[in-house]
Length: 624
Image (cartoon, rainbow, N blue to C red; front, side, top):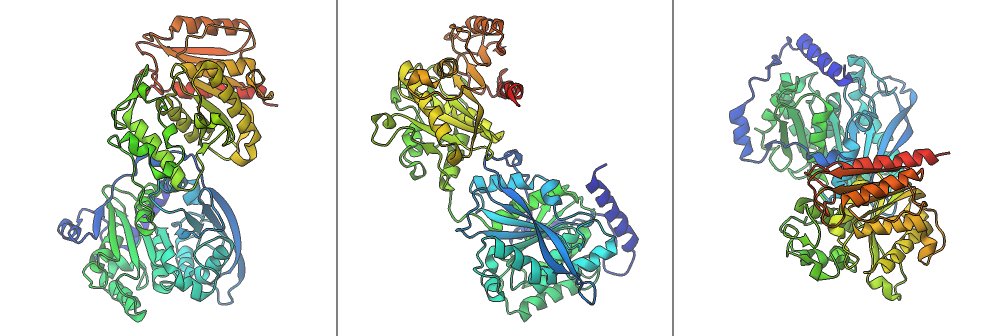
């Protein structure tokens, strides 16, 4: 049984036990959703039924942030003598965190029976943050998951309420100064004056009792924080369940906080989240409905985010955080994203790709047709997926605009070969193994946009570091360029942050021949020093028949309707490699023609996973 299901049931029981007291609303039923009021408030842009998070945001990003555990000195503010204690917080740093830059910061508080690390350990928050930053939806930021519990472990309800009600002291006096003295935020030092000056770069959010904690920060620390994200919880400054039972009195109190502080309507922003199936719907809804009647809380500073059928869980929190951060810390740099209607020439000439935009598409324009990403066609290729093409362009652009180097010249600038070659880098996890992907094109052009970029991007999303080579026409020159690329990666492994052991070579059509030849003959046969051979060669649709007995473990895939690479030739070669005692396998897909790439939407879909497993199997065999 899920921990959070138990928590939810405990809350329901708690509400039934306490909901019979005085106050304006004691029912736990959500059947009285004020549809008329919500409809009216929609017109003022205060109420929104928020959408689901796109599935792609749950994937492991190519560029992952890191989480650091911090311990800091604090005090037990529930006791009169303020006994000294040590507390724990977890800090998310975005990929490429740079101390010379300044970052917005979100402090995030857990709910009852949870602990400080649960947002990072028990939800997809890290992936969501990584992907929001990667695609330019938000600026890179720091997220701190802290706790109101002195011992950072599950406590009784009454003990948790006691601790959260005084957490604003710990936040102001200990947590903020500790974190922002160690990490680069907009505060130049940790004085009250600097925290006040930089409040618009700071947010505080929380779930359930963490939402109650968030309202306390609004009351006591508004001078330090501009943005607030209470999720599934109301304000208890008047009484426990005050938002539910005393919504008018609670609203008047909050109004007084604003007036006493001489804040105007644009000095703060509250993003309140709740689900219609959340057992504490009335706790939240009663208060927010009352607040929206006030002249103090307008569409400029209060947004009511509702999840239809949303529950009291971290899944709902993921949605609130996803949407709220795009309001709080939206990227100031507008990133126009490519679509299937984007002109190919606009991509080539995009300033983000200055100096290498022309390498994204074939240098020899006679081998492709179409003016847009959606109408792109490549000679000898099939199954080109326009949405995948746009995805690749958007990934590259987001990386480039984030200041990450995605294109490397493998020859010196004054070398004439550099005008026709280069290496695109699709980053995976720091220190992970690498793969080099080689597109086909009959050795007269390089069809990377369909035959190596998609493969490299998918490998990076699985955590591997992947490179896609743009090489010169001709089989000899192509192999020379691949040898140079392998040498370049090995020689720059520290800079690239890749593990050079047990790498793999991938290729389709002509690119598959390159991978096979380098795997068999080594870099020393093509003008470079001797570098380690790959642990696996991954080949698609090429009719290579030669077998020397020196082949690395080899994976093949091909379609039965391939008019260029006969599947029987490929099957025969695999059998001969296996006869030599080398591991090899082939997948033959019925009805597919030449150049199907990733094979998305076809019988070949999923072949890349099998190829990765084949590669990893070889790595396990060579592991010490």
